[in-house]
Image (cartoon, rainbow, N blue to C red; front, side, top):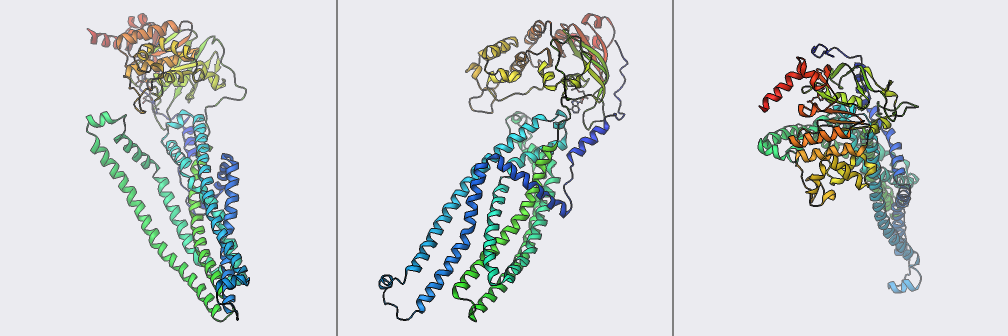
Length: 640
Ligand SMILES: Nc1ncnc2c1ncn2[C@@H]1O[C@H](COP(=O)(O)OP(=O)(O)OP(=O)(O)O)[C@@H](O)[C@H]1O
């Protein structure tokens, strides 16, 4: 079959709305209004629920410990007041003995001694509780990090490949990833706030008994500082949010400049200074923006702190006046001024930490927003299982697909059948759409136009897990896992990780056994240079391991998407010959630029500009003028 190879069109696809939807799912706008920023506090209850789920026991322990600890300061201060009043009373008593020993024997010191012992016990208890709180908090934080990270990994695994190729999604993922480990201070902060609130209530209760206005004065004096902090926190967040793409670029450039993967090219091309300059220019603009906010925050912070100090000294003057006029005792003076001082710093800390909590809650928005993004490629309800064996095969009917955020059709008007049991080779120049076709077949993407049928039924009606289990694909950009040789093969069917004979058989089919024989620790050898004792492989050796993954699977449909490019001519020939033998009776696709391999297939599709330009056997295609013959002759000429 031949179709005219007209240029790929740039007309908008009917699926263009999908892109808009995709953007809407990611909502790249930070919350703008003050109210919207505070609305982020709604994230606190689900966050606390996550803390609770991470470890109910530790959460309960830290809450109880903090509650007890919260009441200690006011108790200690009150006991201090009692001690002073008792000392003043004793000092003013007439006819007391001359020495302390006589005081003691006369029983005059009993009350005072009891107070002092109590104060001592309270001091020890506070210290002990403080340490216990630190311990439970740190254990809880670790449990929470583990719980959040696994949830993040689980969720990411459910999402579509399309999502991972979208820059905005990557920003969101980046922010979410940072949140999963970066929000630990929030937990301690929330618990601390709860504790401080109880302490504040206890101090305020004491003060209210003497004069309610004292507490009001304090609160009013602290409000400007609170609003100021809230404002600057929100500005920092907005800056951070808007700059996620740049921050990712900074991270990327920093990694490029100092990573094992790129070290070779950085040296050969002398990229160091280029990367360093790029890093510096990006981080300088960050620094300038952060400095502007930090300076304003410091200046306004000083003004607001002064307001708070004025409030404090006004109240202090009142207390001193009342003591001089005799309305308050010396013990009262100590208790009130102590309460006042503590209350001021507590309230100040609390209000500031409330505003920082609101800021952190904004960051949580990112985490929860990420969790809300759902996959679009899913199994339908009552999904069908893939037939065993597949009877007729896969039929592409007028299939068109564009990658997200791209105007170009990667494939369009794609019409062909992959018959059950045949080996089909795909050939075509770079960018012709070969890999895209395979991704559509494995439902890594759904077509924007047309449909793909499996045994006459739309692929979307099948159970996704059953479909993926039926297909074994090795892509040209297969992953290189820094794991053992055995695990690098076992990833093809991770459930069979413990079945060594199966791993060895897969290795031998892919010619990987010869690679593994030469490794110092054989199948247990750590591969890659990332970890100690790792051994690096050549490009072709890596490919043999990757191909073995396909044989681990025992899938009905086998697809090799050019993973042999780095193999030497003999290895590639052997690999494909084995592939041909092993795919006997199975449905298989192989993509290669080498005609010596391609010619082994039962049928060959020639792709150009995202559509099928010609199809036939090697001999049939050579017999007619066209791209296949042209490419074949170009390659053959190269060998003459
Ligand atoms: N993830 C992607 N996002 C956007 N566009 C893509 C993506 N992958 C491929 N494309 C585009 O889709 C078109 C088809 O690419 P595809 O990878 O299917 O080609 P191919 O025939 O496999 O090429 P090659 O021989 O170089 O492997 C190309 O124009 C490419 O630029």
